Image (tube, rainbow, N blue to C red):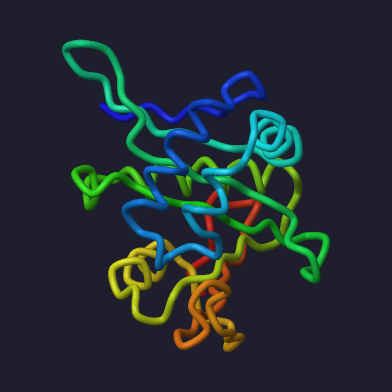
Length: 174
């Protein structure tokens, strides 16, 4: 069973620990680096949690629960005021293709809808085929916007967007 929990500022160590695991596992998928974020102090992690919502996915086990995924939502600079942007989405390799990313994205979409957003967007590396397929299944479509990956300029990423249909209570797949 996967539980999705929104984190508060006092959960900064959870965000730090899972985020650093994500950067160790999938550094190529993020716009930051492990070396950069290992240097962050408690104040920085707390600031992240004050400035935007973060969700953790936990799997219950015989000895308690363990964090197996993470996601955040921001208002991306340069985007319209009614867009919410997914950042930092990561799922532990042993938990992939088991609905964890879908559950995290559902939490982000619900929060975006509660803020009366019209769209939810994200950037995905062009060569991250599994993520591109997942986002497509969930209703995200490429916008045509592309840019070099911030930490790997030889690679590119594309912006994908989901139109929210607030009346239907779910993302539009039109």
